[in-house]
Length: 242
Image (cartoon, rainbow, N blue to C red; front, side, top):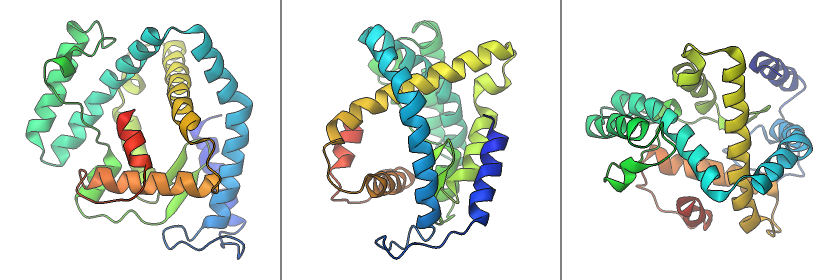
């Protein structure tokens, strides 16, 4: 399904009403909880029907070293967007480090499959356009669960559009089949990585929707503020260890 279809479904669901059900614990960050839960259920059904089986098969047949190589490859591609956003945030030293990582990993690191740059002391950063908007003072706005794309906010959703435009496979001179293949591989590899985290948190008895929402919002606040916040959420330690 295309991104345009996702947008159409989003507006259709919005039109059906966004009021929070009285059965749900209120949260000022999530005023559209009723709508968000519907989208979450839709996404979860697709995930369990298609992505989870594909990711499980991928993990079963792919050696750990190969999975890490694929993760490194896509991380290297993503460093261009990281450098772009660090520049917009006037973090010029970090942006220079990001460019250095791309050069080193794309050459010595064999197109990024090996993360040589980290061993050389070039730190890996994590920046996107949503963080850039937050850096310049834009509030995150309400929590928003997007069809197909998952957790987001009113600020981060449009930010993804910019990140998509600058993502190299989307503008590189490659065949459509190759672009689609890269998208599918990245999606399945990312889902396989998330399965490892789920194995650590799968026995939690709390509402899974609430757990994902709170983890996302806390994580985004952590990133926008470059880690300069305090939190009691144990998930931080797990996310940082991944």
